Amino acid sequence: MPIFHECQRCTACCRWPGQVRLTDAEITRLAAFTGLSESDFIQQFTRLTTDRRGLALLDKPDGACVFLDGENCAVQPVKPQQCRDFPNLWNFPGFEKICHARPRLVPPEEYEHLIRTATSRTPPPPIPNH
Image (cartoon, rainbow, N blue to C red):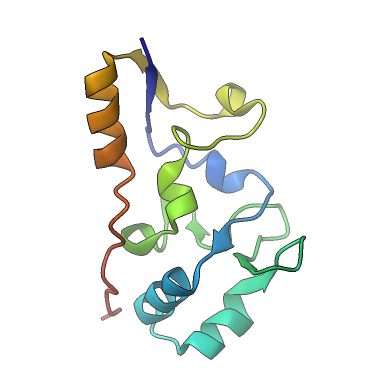
């Protein structure tokens, strides 16, 4: 049976150094959510990816995501797909040692349903910051 990892929102994955790649649509949503123009958002919150083929979110000096605010994601409603897909559709070596997601054996049909629900491929609409 497949294992589904239930995220506990421990933010350990947000503290792991790496790169969160951004699509153009994600930049649009994040910029709208933060109340910035796309150009200003790109200047303030992104960097070139290591392969120089796109943009990724900046990291804080300690490697944490620039949008990690204490124990909360400051852009939770519009967080990038890569973040929504963790840990079920992507993860990194050793994630089980720091991630508090609860592994659960589930029947294949339930796994497919849980994956569709937890990692909805329909991007959320831009949400203005009020």
